[in-house]
Image (tube, rainbow, N blue to C red):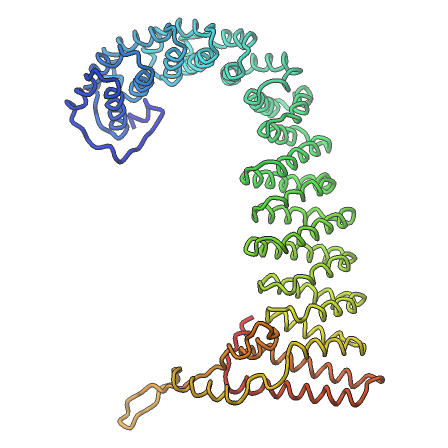
Length: 603
């Protein structure tokens, strides 16, 4: 705990091993600067890991302090930050007097790096006895020609005034005069931070004096000014009108950080539609242009919060929000779609549907692994839009039909279930949807899609032309009978009986003990008929998908019954088709009774 109180940094290096103090002292005494640097690094790491090396302080003062090497000087200040500065009785170590003298010399050194290193060290120092004799030197460095020295001098004065106000009681006044004349952005920012925390009234006076020039300042000081504005307005809400114009002026900043903070400040200061709209536009700009996905997720969370309080404002900017779909990150796309679905209404549904259709078309040529989940989300979003606004169903269903031939089961199933719902709900679309499904039937690959499409055929093919087209499509996919010849089935049965035991219930032997019975299961070789030109439906039946077989048989039966009910039906054609249907159904029976794996039943 003592180390944590006096040191502002932690370094862990498990490769550092315990070294004898005499060896470390020898390294410090070396005339080689590189050796001194390595030894001092090792001492710092050992001290941070808990080793007590206070006995080396005098060696450091004797052999390191006089050296003018810049790297060694930087390591020296890191060492002084970590070393114990007080004795066991709580008094400052006598050696610290020499250290104070060294720091005073460095504060007056002609090299700006040496001065800056000493000032950075003092900006973290919490020892009154060390800071007190150096106050006058700190003040002098506020007027140094180099900005690096001035900005660190401000931090050192800020630390001294905050820790021991009585040492520099006029600190805020000094910094107030300094910030008016300073031109460096970093030094000005450090001074403004000190005023905000030590004398807020003076910081507000400065902010009011430069409020017209605030948009031309650096982004680092703009962020601090926005923070002060929020703080003041929370304390006194009547001050909002004084600073809201400055926030609006900063909204056009080229810095993404400033734009984000401006948007957050506007929302916190005002609930007026103009302010909220400006904030939402800034968030949308970040969503479209920023490269960091974490920033985009934060922006989307902000927009979601605004949607709950100001939904009407966001609905007018929905097209700006939907541009966030350009991100390749799936989490960002999901959040954008969820937000858009909350905002879609009658006035913007057509524009949203156009964008969703374009996005779903883009997934056709994209990487399959990345596009599948995105396509599924788009289908769900379109489904939600159709449920809310049924009149758009006709504009999207034809686009979605193009994706029923997707080899990904979840994506294709999502599409076909949506199409089934549209066909059931909107009779005016049935004819065109059925025609398109017949066209795409030979390209289907997923069993569940086959089952749904066959059900649609059996329910909504009513005219003779539709029945003829559906029957022709199914006939082309089933092929000729038999599906598998008797010789192949016999070979499959003999192979399965000889090689595939299947555990069943126990049997009781003559002596009263139990034994396990084994039965053989067999499967039709799935490689039979699996050539490049084999229709998918026929392949599924041969592979043993009994569910598809049952739906196929049911669909054929319904189609023939409906065809027989037509007044214009040709009896000769009807008899021919009925015979073909009977042949197919009878050909499916051996596949079901003599083997196969009912792999299609699980879904």
